[in-house]
Image (cartoon, rainbow, N blue to C red; front, side, top):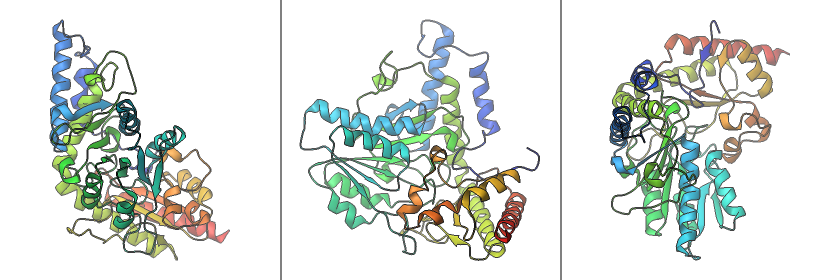
Length: 403
């Protein structure tokens, strides 16, 4: 679309040309099945997968044997949550079954947790701090610790929220979870390429990733399964050929896996430069929107908020705003007709008429949640796009308010 501006990079990102270049040979000339190692083409594919596994593992501070390739973070979350619960059932420990998560999690966590609740697992969904507090979107450490005990099996936490960008302080969370003898699963889908992601520093036992959130291909992701120190095991959800050490059967997507690894490598290598650049563009977008739209309000942590270690408390590429005085769906339709790709929340929930559960969780009412916009910037976003987008949005809001 001529003049289109894409600012919806939390839903998906543009494939980096360097990633495509790495993938192309495995889509064309080198098309062997990585499981067919009786001939050279199969062995080449297997070697490419093995190399990609090591590359991806290196990008997150893991060992290659701890990486299980999946179709994306949704499958990884399901494998982590349902697979851990199935493992506990097989071990026959009726005392340790509690699942703990946050009300603001992605549906790819909330839905499998709800499925476990239907199966009889006790579930605790913790609130997060409200808008107006110092830490909107973060779980209160004291409430988390109080929820844990000898009955806790698994705690699942989104490292960086996909709607309001709030980054959880994982160190005290991990300490409390492990003190209770439980397993910590961290959804890192939005984090890689936007903040440092190192599984040991996070204290993660399980961690989910998706290639298309960091300029890789759609349909491929990974689950980190700790094998060092406090090793964990999960039961498979898919059965068949026994690929991925039996944890995820199915013919390996060699081009996709190569693309995932290259995307992760580029994200890790470029973070020092891309992070500050995206943060500057995000702040510029907010300044121009706030100047052009009277009454505009920020959703989520303050843009300048930092954690105890001085790192940003919000994803550097994230902006979420409430636009008073307009109908949210009408505003989105107006902006879309003007060539702007933005959203009101998670792409996985866009078909639902319900307002964002994340914004409701931080205390926004339904009307405020519906009249909110989410922006996600990327390495390809330019200063001129930010300025033009802000001008179009301000004009669109002014037009709707005039009606």
